[in-house]
Length: 262
Length: 265
Image 1: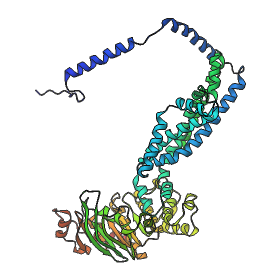
Image 2: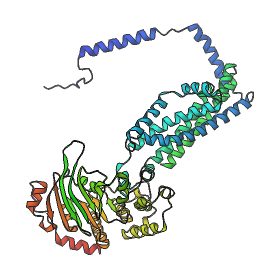
Image 3: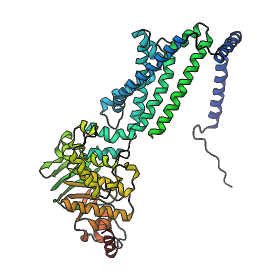
Image 4: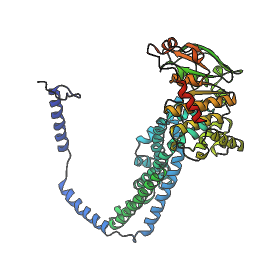
């Protein structure tokens, strides 16, 4: 009788497999053991957490109303401006970073710019830009614009690299210039996804605007930070509820628009 | 008159895809380029409008040497060379009309085409070409709504919009059913006759080629192994081009064909 067993492709030697599993579990046990937990502190924190949930359930929109609404307004302004400028700048960077349409030096420059932009989290960029330009929405606007270029630039470049080359070849064969080829052969192929991604990025930028506010880059995040610092959990709850509502609205809207363009 | 002299092509340091090809195409002649896959047919016609740069040799259209033009100068010449593709290569998300008008891009500035401000004459002509290929009612449909045969007609109208002196046609019928294939070949043939256009047509289907072209060139391994009238294409010649096979059924069935032309008329 011929028996059959699926061969182990990854680690063919059984002894090695056992050794690797043992090493992995040992590391896991030692690793978990090395995390110090101060149970006393956790207990105190639970109480604070309870008060926070209480504040969240009884949000206070009035005490800091002026701060909250100016914060929301600033965040929205920051989001809209940085998304629009980010999209406009991501188009040349994305085109430059697409291997199939760009000369090598431009490709390398745009790719590295995008890679650097993507490797740094928004908060880190914001800390740096706040140090450069001072507290406020301008640093936030720059941070989000920079992050948008990295995000959309990369996705646009990938989209361009995956286009149907025949359409490009056909337009090239009519004697079209480089710009005409981009506009007539490539843009129609990438546009629906580009619009969808832009709205998706709008969502992300609003959420990020709340986070980078905490490190001083203006907007609703600054208001949230102040409330928490002063133990005004009901005001913080109000801010969080507003953020959630706006994010939900953005998500719903962008989903609807994406469906509509495709 | 298209003149090809000692054309050679290799990719990087790979093998020669085209080995010393020379032939002439007088004005108004339709040439069928046949040969097995990988014989270099597709490379051959792309060397003419420089979608692929030839390695050696000279290609001359009327009094312009296409093979020695710089890449910025070649754009001007491409305007005069219409190209029709195997899978139509229309911009799927643009309308039929926009696809036809894209044949004019070489004549327009970027801003004019960007704002879709095409000259009235171009628009009039585009409607005329759409009428000629029987798609006048589909002008504002998106290209991806059309059937294969209709898309190829749009491809033909786009090539016509260039006001070309030469047509390069790459496997125009490979994705079409036999009946549509004949209609498309007949359309290309009659347009070439009307406008006294010369054409080079890459084609797999030997009987179809024999029926619609004036002259056949057989490529095999990057070399011309046959150049003559369709009725000189004997079994011996087919064996030389494609290798040993039973070729007795390849000759087109004349009776069938007459019936079809009546239908079309």
